[in-house]
Length: 84
Image (tube, rainbow, N blue to C red; front, side, top):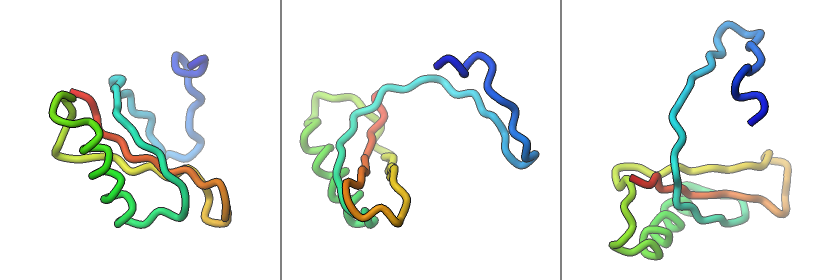
């Protein structure tokens, strides 16, 4: 957060800084080498866990993988639904 007010300027002209509003998410985490099928399955599990009481965007979900391909163990992946 200390760099939000004055982020460094990109040295590559094709890289742009885009300001966005904050968001609140519902998320679930899982390990392994994630395939599309894994993201679909975990999105369904998260949707089921949230039930009908939670208000979130149903037209999309976000898939996140945090590790380089050469990391064999302790991998971290997430599925996010954006809260309305």
